Amino acid sequence: MDKLDTKEIPEKPGIYIFKDKFEEPLYVGKAKNLRKRVPSYFGQNTSWKVKRLINEAFSISFVVSQNEANALLAEYSFIQEFKPKYNIQFKDDKSYPYITITSDEWPRVLVSRNINNKNINFGPFPFIGAAKRSLDHLINIFPVRTCNDTTFKNHQKMGKPCLLYEIEKCSGPCVSKVTKTEYDVMLNNLKEFYKGNSDHYINDKTLEMKSLSNSQKYEEAQKIKNIIKHLENARINQTLMTSNEKNVDVIGIDIGKYDVVITCLLIRNGRITGEVKRSFEPINVDEVENYLPQIIINLFEENSPSNEILISHEFPLKETIQKQLSDRWNKNIKLLNPKRGWKKDLLETALGDAKELRRVSDLKRRTDLEFRALSLEQLKNKLNLKNIPYRIEAYDISNLGDKYRVGSMVVMEDGLTKPSMYRKFHIRSFKGQDDFRSIEEVLFRRLKRLNSEKEEDQSFRRTPDLILIDGGKGQLSKAKSVIDYFEMNIDVIGLAKKEEEIFIPFTKESVLLNKNSEALFVLQNIRDEAHRFAIKENRRLRIKDLDLDNTLNIKGVSKSSILDLIKNLKTLNKLSNASLNELEKIISKNEAKKVYDYFNHPEI
Figure 1: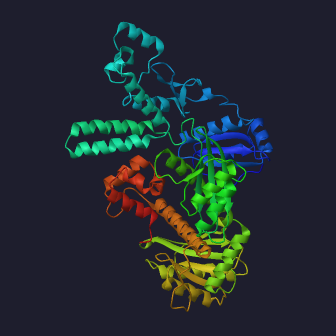
Figure 2 (figure 1 turned 90 degrees about the vertical axis):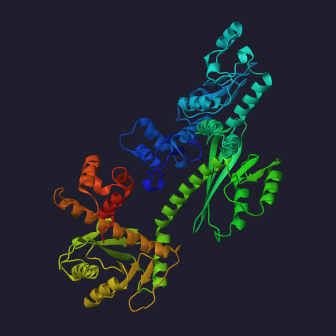
Figure 3 (figure 1 turned 30 degrees about the vertical axis):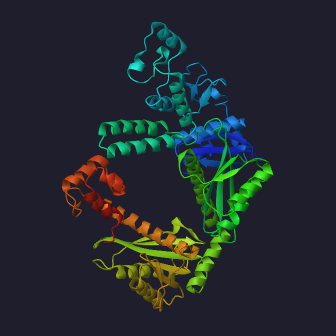
């Protein structure tokens, strides 16, 4: 198997599945950050086992999750279902902890790794601590017994309850402090909670708390608030867990400009046991009602669906689709669009996975030569250019007042940026701040080198099909005058940020491209890159010239705040690259904004 392009790997928690040529899983692994983990399999210094896996693997797929705990659960579920030959862990149900309710006369609730079919088991949980914390929170509300049989019988003989009863973490069934009916109600509530019906209790308790508060019964309201807190904490990590009875198919749909991508997660007996990913290119992506029914029918043409299919979009003909699927598989099937609870949580997981599939789909589309060629041809036709702009050069100016004046030249060839051909210019023909004269100088120096027969720089030797100036009519006019001076037949346009207006020489009205246009995306991409490259050089010059005692005077920021920043961030380089959020943790929001703007928005 060839090494994947790093950009195609999700930068999120999740699982990765190496598959053979028959699409059968060979190895399943989980990662806190898939993009950091997966490339390590393709290194030169890997073990013989990894090399053998890579040689045998034909493809790799991903399922992203909301957090590392859910990734761990998904990994476990896939290994239990498919038993991939390269996985040696988690081959039995002892690998993960469960919440177990025993079959005793007075059932006990405990955390266990040993699965006994006589008992009722909920899970698995990702970590032993997560299972224990979840149970501990619920015991505060449903105080069923947690003690072992020996302890239970001893207290029966003594006729005296244990300490857990005294601290209200047990209802005292050993000494008949609770009736069998009351005990069974608590057990049923506990079971329902672990089946995923936690919203029911939380919503009821929230209404009760508000009612007590409105009646000014604040102490009682506070007690209910504490119960709600326990319920909220107990349901953490439930996203990928349902009861052992639950079978659902979860379909997340992401609709793009050109195609539709879907992820279907197959949940069987409370575990993710498979995933199906599809991509479609309907004639019109906006006509959801026309293609979504067929997508769902095709998805389950050969694979038997569960009785419940959760889907992220509402659409007409839902009843018709339900009937068709029910008839096809001879069982009652419902399509649901849940708005809350564990089903909604599962749907969010599938949607996140679909959005990641969309990101990779868009990335592949924009790196596809044929698609890029169509985008450039669209650009030529929309702007009436002389030629298809196979080489575009974008220019931007960055300065801080009349200091650190920098011009950037960024290059795009065949729709892809070419960092090796970027060039930077330090303004030197005049003093003071003047963006118009700066553009004029930068373009003059660049085209002069293009005119020179002795030029050796590979980037300066190439003639652009289109020159893009970051700015409006003023900057465009100066750029056009330089091109005319050298008598060059090169198209030039200006792109203003505010409304994304495009200015063309000798045209009064600006041009506005469709915001979903790939032609506009090409221009925005190279314009933003020119802006980033100019700021990067501007920042480098300022850091090089900074002196804490003399020149680090940011208007509106006190010297003590600057010293606090340096004390925490250690170096000027870290200070210049700090996010606004990082700065606000050290100094006031107002001063943090001024420091951030100083390093990131210098053209003022």
